[in-house]
Image 1: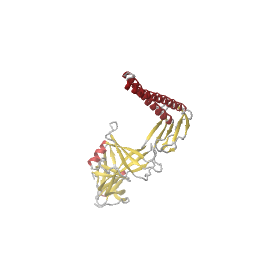
Image 2: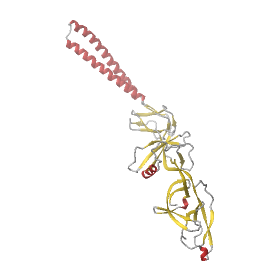
Image 3: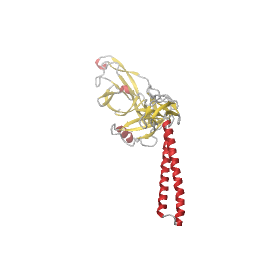
Image 4: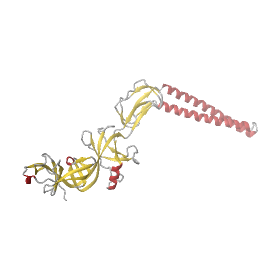
Length: 364
């Protein structure tokens, strides 16, 4: 059956015994699908002398239809880090305000560095002292080697001098390590942004004391690109796999569209970057992360949006408006109106939604 576009509603005559205002749909050429509250199997009204009333009939559509799948997603930063001090001390400078955009390497906070400067000077002094002791022990070893070769001292004296040299060399290495640690601590008093992004609003004030490794000064999130995370149920995953449209096959999840909470479509497309290794036991679903460029900073972490995934093209799919469907418990029905005006209610199985229409899998 060739592709047909949806046409406007038309009026069809039905007996007066049918309630007025009932909705029906017509599949062009041979049937109509709709919602009728009563009247199935009755004799034509004309035979009973009843007036004929008109009900509105809408046309169904049969065409090759690209199937899309829709999921609820949430925007997440691709990189997010809590900025914690590596050293303890009082904050003496705050270079950014909460909510500001920062660049990688930009200074954020300064911790009082005086005690760390003193620690570095002390470590360097200890290193100099250790290096002097090592230099002296090396001179001793050289002299003792000459004396031992001439028999002027015992071998034990030489061995003792050489052992002292090794000990002093170890002390020098330990002092150098302390100098490096003191230099690192001093450098860590200035905290910089590890990457470009936006910093959260925080209540940290000038002069506040921070504890190394525990106090969170701020949280930094990247802004471009962003992730949109969504989940798919196990049953839907199995259904798509049986249809040959498995989410695990290459190309599935390319050219994703995003519909924001106000109904507008995000102008840039995205693609799936990460798929969880398996189903989450708590929810029985598999998680996906799609990447979207965000050059205008329109997408913010925490926002919700609908993720539209392009699937297969369904050949000759029958589409009906969702309002033509009757739902009873776990069953779905529509009313078929033939050319002879006979009414029949049929149970159908619905497929994916396509705009305000829905695909009928079988039953029509």
